[in-house]
Length: 99
Image (tube, rainbow, N blue to C red; front, side):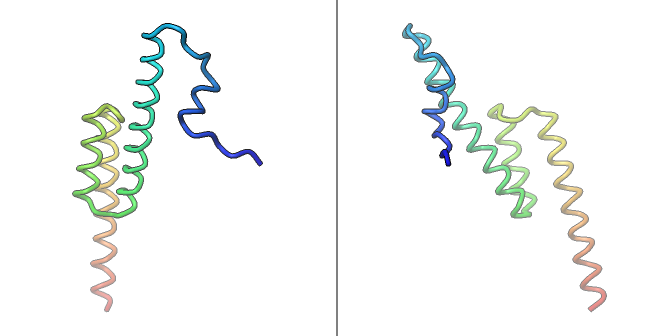
C-alpha cells in the first residue's frame, strides 16, 4: 500500500522542477501558502466541533481576514453556527424543563 507523500514531495512530483530563480521562489511560496491554508482549514473544523460560539466566530473571522475563505462563506458559516447554537440551547432548555 502506498503512503501519501508529504506536501513538499507531493508538489515536486506533480510540477516540473523550476529552472529560473523566480520560479523556484514562486514554488516555495505556493507550498508555504498551501500548508498555511490547510492548517487554518483544519483549525476551522476542530473549532466547529467544540461548539463554543465565540471561538468559532473568532476562527472564522481570522480565516476570512487572511484570505483562506471568502467573506460570503465566512458570513454563511457564522450564520450556520448561530443557528446550530440556538437549536442546541433550545434542546438543552427543553431537557432541563422535563427534569
